[in-house]
Length: 277
Image (tube, rainbow, N blue to C red; front, side, top):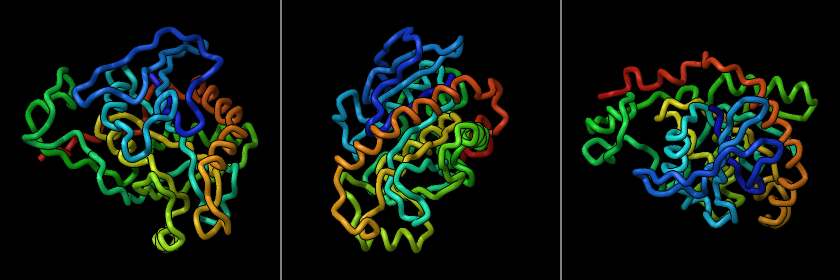
């Protein structure tokens, strides 16, 4: 099942038949919102609001581990994350879609792994994830290709068909937040190869990968980053841009639900092979 994690400005999905709304209590605490389970033309889908229904979780306090675990518990094996970003690459303009393919992590205080050796949480289940946690294993996953190529290719096909302006690759720099970055920080990130900047992409991507989920992120450029914009950045600007693109975002999501192949051919499900110490 595909799970959608909605970012700033995307708190619900229309056009799907709602089958259930569940609040999953996980070994890592409660998720940021109940999980909506729906159906579109016979295909099941789950939706979770990253920041909560009323945007009550700032980026540095989002319960990322609980969110991904809750989706896993209800049968999600693929995740599409929607995020608003600032553009560092001057070719990326407000309103553009970006299908990111790599990341730089500049967060500082976030819990970014399930596998904590002898300190691992007690969990139930019989799959490989549960075994590694139950046996208190140390695990090092490969993140050479952190974003699922199969889901990314499906997104590209959809964006091409709809003639939406998009960039097929880009490096996402994740900062701690909740403040916006300084102009000096953006200059540094530009020199390091970042194309866009945001506050929520990490550790979400690696946590999904640790659970052998496919994970892709569809980013929407909300504004130029600090020092590039030439003006003071505001949250209002981000939300207004996301509101303008909301219908386009939902169009892409609906098409992905319908067109994503049932069989996973990407290898994301094999990430734990050889990762155990």
